[in-house]
Image 1: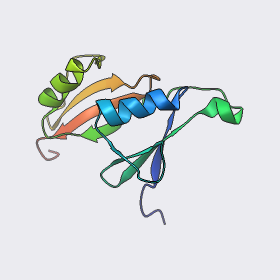
Image 2 (image 1 turned 60 degrees about the horizontal axis):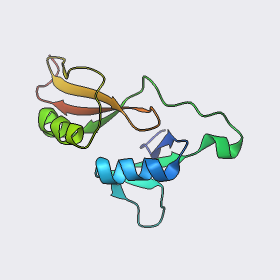
Image 3 (image 1 turned 120 degrees about the vertical axis):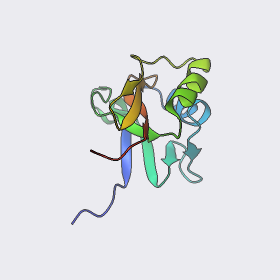
Image 4 (image 1 turned 180 degrees about the vertical axis):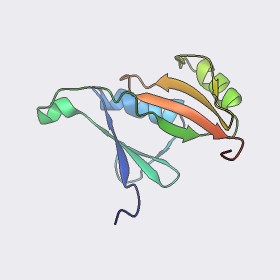
Length: 119
């Protein structure tokens, strides 16, 4: 019935600030036709401002978007050099590395790289 993920909605209180973070800091590919949409592979991230629709703003918590990188340590170091703060040491689960951080609105994100199959 469900065949794919169309987009991930990312709540923000400042769409321009969020755009700068996702494009300039994270390096996501901006959409050619929508200023506040960005691409990670075939998945679109869409920035929206709930307060402009009469809804209260709440950051997305505990549903980390897992952003694939080949080397978590190298990607983390690059983002830290750009001022991104990570919430803890990089996690090693025995099959992958994960490094948790937030965007400027407090939405949870992670760098992720699987290095072994599930046991």
